[in-house]
Image 1 (spheres, helix red, strand yellow):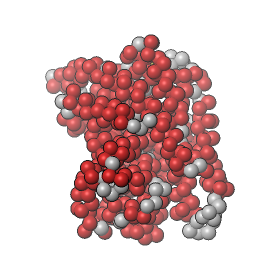
Image 2: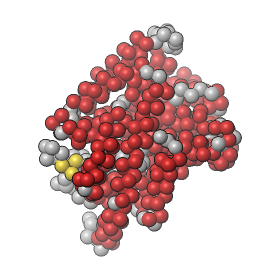
Image 3: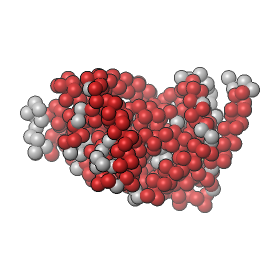
Image 4: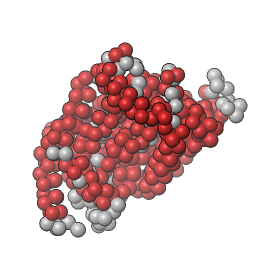
Length: 444
């Protein structure tokens, strides 16, 4: 499914949003930060969580294992040039996030219990009409599987095995099914205590975990880059040059390299996929444009900052040349090469927080999708299916996991980009009204 048409839909659609909006999301970056800081919060506005908790919940899902192992997979398959196309995808993704998440507030609907809900499926039904409901159902069905925690559980289990259990002789490197199963069970119990508390508990946990995990990871990678400062410049140049020559990998096929970069960026920051509309649709606000501005900070933090840090750590330490495609292992080798045994355990802490935060938020996405399909009174059933799949992810190969998630993400992107493109004039009309009121100081 990740062929040229889907890449054109995501990147071409994002480029259209950039041009159509005249770079509006980028021009109001400072205002977006002020909204995020809570300057415009009103506890009486409809919704469940504030702007910061909404962004934290969305980032908890996107700033996760995709930033640590997803980037490693992209580089091992596509070489340094894949990073450039992740950057390009993120830049257009900023505009895409602005449009999709503005719509998630603009076209909120009500579930079968009468509670206000946001997300791509409600955007389609409320914004395009009931006749489009089959397209909304496609998104929701794909969301049930795309939101499964199998990738996070797989990579967290692998990290625990490779970093803690095998080196300390607690399990065999070649026969680890039982230890993986036990690790999965522990993860299941930990995640279950949070997700059954709903979005309010998830939002509060995420708003504490996300800033801490970004700072710890950022600091660790800065040390690695400082140690290898002599080759940093040459690799930054190689990221750009290899993006157009694909000499490092992909057999010189630039098109395949672009698809690799876009695919991994989509998994990392999910711009255009639509899962973030579910989190931002729960924000306490009456201003759709305000939430769109907050949401567009996501791809910047996720891909431009965090993914770039991972990529540079892998590149400057030269571990990407080993040919290891097993995600987290490659990143672990980079931390070990630069920081020794301490680096391994620092990464383990980061991995635990990154994976844990994603595990919490994805469950919320799945419950909302099931609530749309089967009724809000049944949506809690998804959580049992969700925690059970953690065990599956813990003992399954990474290739099977990535293929399933990539397929579901591709399926979700089609309804999300379709509704965003069709309703983009509505967003621009709302933006003109919002910023007009702001200039008149009618917005305090």
